[in-house]
Amino acid sequence: MRKKKEDKDKRVCERAEDFITHPVHIDSEETSSKRKESLGDRIRKAREILNLSIAELSNRTGIASYTLKRIEANEITPPLGDLVKLGKALETKMSFFISPGAKKPMTVVRADQREETPRHLGKKGERYGYFYESLAPEKANRLMEPFMVTLTPAKKVRPSTHDGQEFLFVLEGKMMAQVGGQKEYLEPGDAIYYDSSEPHFVKCVGRKQAKVLAVLYEGR
Image (cartoon, rainbow, N blue to C red; front, side, top):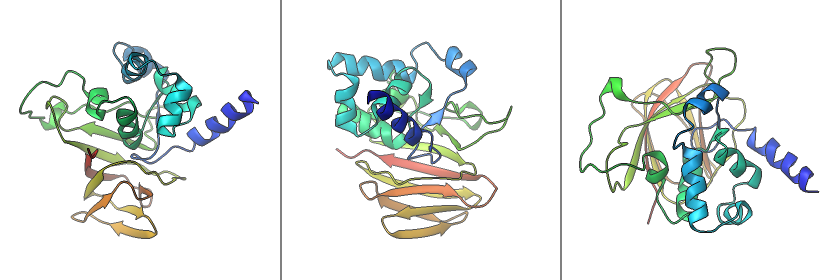
C-alpha cells in the first residue's frame, strides 16, 4: 500500500514545470558539486530541530512525503511556492533556505554575479522548465524575495496556493498567468500582481523563453 502511495506521489512530482508551482530536477553532477550545505540539507536540519518526521512535515505543508524525501536528498529543488510553505511549517523564512548567511543591511547584485539555481536538463545542454536567480541573496531581514526568472516551454502545469503575494513584470518573451478563474497573457512591459492564496500558475507562451522579474512576499 505504501509503495502504491509513493508511486502516486512520484507521478505527481514528475508533472513539474512551472517556476512558482513545481520542483526542478537536479542533474547528478550538480547534486554532488552542491552537496555541501545544500538546500536539501538545510531543510532536513530545520525539520530535525523541530523533531518533525517527514510525514508530519508533509501534513503541515501538503507536500507529498515522496517529494520531501527527494528534496532532502538533493534530487530535486522545490518551487518557490513550496519554499514559502516549508518556511511557515519549519518556523523560519524562505530566505533561510535560499541564503542562510545573509547579514547585510544593503546588497548589490551585479549582472555578471547572479547565480542560477539547479535546473532540470533534458538532452545535453538543453534547459527545460525554468531557472531563477536571486536578486538579493545577502540582504538580511528581507520582507520580499526578488528573482530574475527565465521560463522555458513546458507541456503541463498545475495550480498552486500558498501564503503571500506575487508581483511579476515581463522583460522578454510572452507568458500566461492564470489566477483563480482569470487567465491573462502578458508581453514585455506588462505586469501582474496577485494574492498567492488564489490558485495560480504561470508559463511561457509558444516555443520561446520568457524572462520575468518576480517579487514574492511571504506574508506574516
